[in-house]
Length: 89
Image 1 (tube, helix red, strand yellow):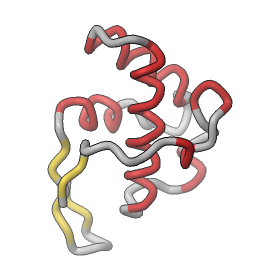
Image 2 (tube, rainbow, N blue to C red; image 1 turned 180 degrees about the vertical axis):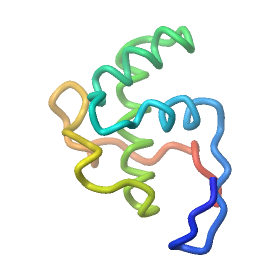
Image 3 (cartoon, rainbow, N blue to C red; image 1 turned 120 degrees about the vertical axis):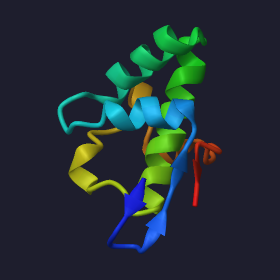
């Protein structure tokens, strides 16, 4: 992924790419987590934690506008879990 504003290129792994493709400003983090759980055959709680971590990582890298994230998964804030290794710069 090319970040023109930051002058960087980010390489997303399969999970990060899957999540990124669903960030349309309308789909909730909860819905993204459900899709991750189904697509990658992981436990819903694990998927929720991974989505929260990826959203925080995207935000930290200034790849998301704040209004794209409408709250955490399962009532958590995006900062409740450590970062995921989904994005390399």
